[in-house]
Length: 182
Image 1 (cartoon, rainbow, N blue to C red):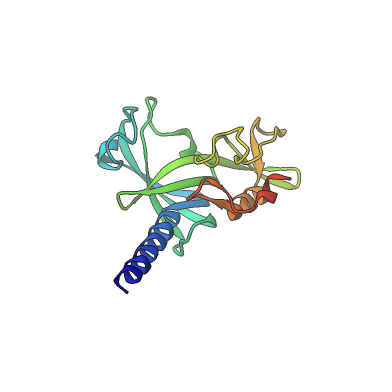
Image 2: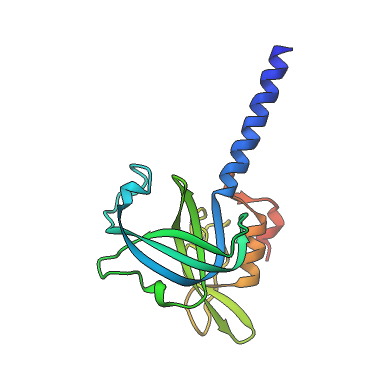
């Protein structure tokens, strides 16, 4: 009886860990609202040894959410952190609608990747690389990029929605192998 109780508790804990880890990622389409510099450096936001590059101070950004592509997030605005570059603020902060891949670290969202949303003919495209930082570009589980008239690497927004609906972050694979045959 005690063995079965322990087994049930372990199974429940594994489920909680899986649910928590999946909810730590947020993929959204959003537009900038505000940016401010902080006195926080990257080691104050990210676990030690997670990053080996010496970034400048952290930037606190607030964006208005247009669409949640992946994750569970009910608010209309999100606050996240990125870092100053050698030349100052990152170039994307002056763009309109953006693709943002955020990861929750130490209770705060940190920008993992960004892409630009552009209108090309009748398609909405996300221009950028490493749109899923958990799948190396060119691998069988990476989003399928194409060259467009506006950027060298792009993914149609509709295809990216479908991609993230089938991607399993916990095993870094697709939930269905048929997703790869498109």
